[in-house]
Amino acid sequence: MTVRFGVLGTGHWAQTVHAAALAEHPTASLAGVWGRDLAKAKAVGAEFDVPGYADLDALLAEVDAVAIAVPPDVQVALVERAAAAGKHLLLEKPIGLSLADADRVVSAVRAAGVASVVFFTFRFQPSTATWLAQAGRTMLAGGAGTWLSALAGSPFDSAWRRRHGALWDIGPHALSLLLPALGPVTTVQAGGGSGDTVHLVLQHSAGVSSTVTLSHTVTPMSTGIEFYVHGDAGRVVLLPDTEHPVEALSVAVDELGAAAMTGGAHPCDVGFGRTVVAVLAAAERALASGCREPVED
Image (tube, one colour):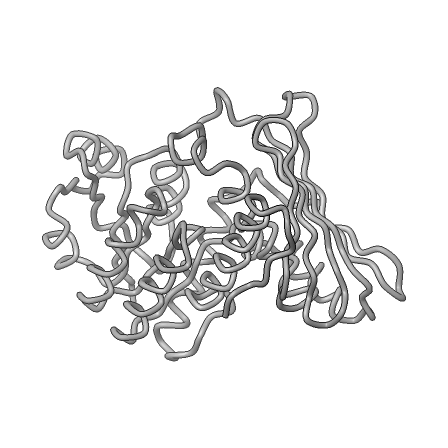
């Protein structure tokens, strides 16, 4: 059975990843593109030979699921409307910019009984699955992650990323790796560096800790990504793949379809998305207070 998707969003990621992956997917189809600017929606839709919509309800009437690629604060209300219409949801991270907004998303999805997958890109790549499996066979003592990027002038340079910084944009990716490897985070310490650089110390419930450094404001020659966990079997390193997001989203589409068919929860559903937001919110409080902050349930 072909799952009909609508893409909500007209930006770079919506066009080059969400729409592109759905247009070539073997068991899903792209039925239309919605945007707040009808001209942009029509332009993106025309690239994939589907209609563009400014009327969200009109698009929802034509699809089984939606893939949402808009700023997080815009995504929340769209989730509520799509879930209420009974549509399964492929969401972008973070699912909100506050715990209250994340709770709105979780409540809408659970009330509607629809399936959800949050597109933490690295979690839908074979190398990450291998890394997590290796980590699971190791008695872990901790871990670390570094993601340094140069946002200015890139296709991802946007108002919401500049306002909320690397913590909220690429922090979710870091947590999507360290949480399944090391367990839930109970407290966060944080310190700022130059630009939007932030350093986090995460205490995990298993009694181990991890560190994370994030930045969107380093020089282009300083950029790079690396994650590792360490324990009795040594260091297990992951160098995430940033070059093949279309392939990763195609996997996410498959897994959303499977969750919709079985009614089961996906490891990266909105519940996990909320957990990530809770850690980010604690980190934001820690940056402001200079103190260790607990992660709210």
